[in-house]
Image (cartoon, rainbow, N blue to C red; front, side):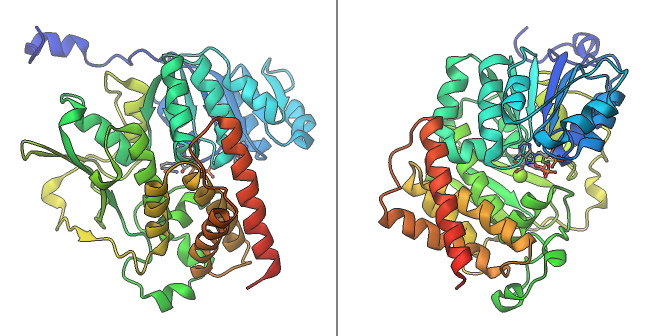
Length: 407
Ligand code: NDP
Ligand code: MG
């Protein structure tokens, strides 16, 4: 039967883990990586962990590799290889180091790669995963933001399944499960509004690193937490959604929803709107990406709508959050503009975290870099991964030169 299954059919199918058995995790020591391994630990016997990678946290990488009996552990920083080997002595776990070793690990022919490296550093490994894994569970949004056209073509060329992990995009994917994507009229991503949702521009200008890192609803890595405070994260997510779903930029929208219960709203041409709801916990979209087309049991708090005092929605204020406006402009400009936006933002967020610039200067630096790049003719048609990496480098150099000069 194609429609609703009988109660007995549905019951016999529930409970198994789906098609993913062998699993590698890029960025295993991070927030998404740790949450993924938490899901793995709660499904004993369901997954075989093949490769785990990290950049510098050798202690946590070794500990996770031992705990999950990985076959391979790779550390990006080559200086830490001896330390990693030392920690893995007698375990039989292979150790490797360096950028290329991460790409090699990502190329292991597994059922699924969780692509959860932060930033454009995740591009080459995620492309490698797309060519060799059956499925990529994509958390690394920078891959779609900077090289969306090339990445989607690459995924299609290798017949790789692409499952979004970003909670809003996982929600849209779920809302589309039973509908023709051509019938979409509008996709609305929700945003918590971050810690500065109600702050004035002047108050935000003086915000400290600790205040910006204090996200009200989500526990995430430092980079994305700052992006949530500037709302650049939602801007990057609009670009991400543009590549994942068959919509034009003017069909993409975002609204502030401080409770972070509704993750997206997908409106169709017959007037229906589907919302995906869950308590804010990344293990829900992670379970969906690993279990699809089935659903894995997630160890998360269940939504009790009677316990919610209210669910509110408000427009995003692009005057107070200029990063969102910049991302929207880059989306409309297309081509290499989003890669330049992303590169400048990575430099700006790192500088803010190092107390080199103030909070308001993050968006200033991104806006300045986009303008300079335009003047220099760097905003061109979308191109290959190699070209995108070249533009990424040039945009970083521009941003750094501005930082070094001061204002
Ligand atoms: P974290 O900063 O917590 O973790 C990043 C991971 O990437 C770590 O394992 C880190 O290793 C590794 N890493 C850092 N730099 C490099 C590098 N240059 N080369 C290779 N590996 C590197 O990030 P998150 O888990 O928060 O985010 C990961 C991705 O998922 C991001 O793209 C983010 O936008 C996206 N995402 C995250 C969400 C979340 O809830 N956290 C929600 C939605 C999307 P080490 O620990 O050694 O530094
Ligand atoms: Mg998100």
